[in-house]
Image (tube, rainbow, N blue to C red):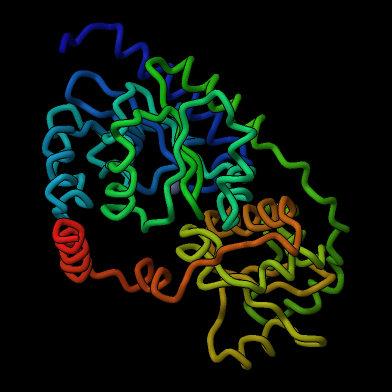
Length: 353
Ligand SMILES: [Zn+2]
């Protein structure tokens, strides 16, 4: 492909859109979400661990050779989860590694792909009746529902099943949203459209009881969360009831741990830690708000707010599907080799079925 100014200008345009997406906590939280542009056989994709919000200040895009990556997915080869093996060193000025979700982008044929952890989408995508909920709202769009699969090779395989349909919109169960188009402008317009179609008016929660929380944190190694909106997971009783059900999506597990820890009546942070025998990243104090462990990362704080934003868009009686024990283990105790074998077995079973 020509090294013309055309695609470089488009990459700059993508960075500007990435920064906009990254600065909206209702679309991305911390290092979550990623964007990409295909130039011939090269995929420019956000680097792992970087924030979309920093797209204009830092070098966050990494060039990856697509053909061997897609071949690895097709061969159900765990190398598909090691996209850094396929980075084009000569063009990779940052030396960063591509996102774990690189295969999601490579498998979409459209030139521009935006993947976001949109809270309105997630509030639909955690429901067992998601398809019935979003179907009427997405009428007229070429969209597909992808059942939950762990990010990496399992998610890539689940998406690959829809390739013939060439969808422009993917609703990833218990995860988020993917939109794809031929230009950056069209992709951004599609994202805005889908976001508006899936919008849910959040329940208003009462404010945090900061004096009470400060007392419960004193001398315990816990602190107030950065975004004040994070308290709503504990100040809204319906949200707290939903949080008690378990983990709703992978980034919650990765940044905050399994499920939500809810303090019992009268407990301060150290009483909760003593009861559990471990120090959770965040603790919900019903009716008061939440506390974060002193060493919680900015990404964890962003994820605590994401939880509040998602829960505020769900009724307590909604048919919510939480991640299973096995799905938690896949995220926290993940062994690529066990996986390769498991996937190979499943593929073999499919062939003989
Ligand atoms: Zn994701």
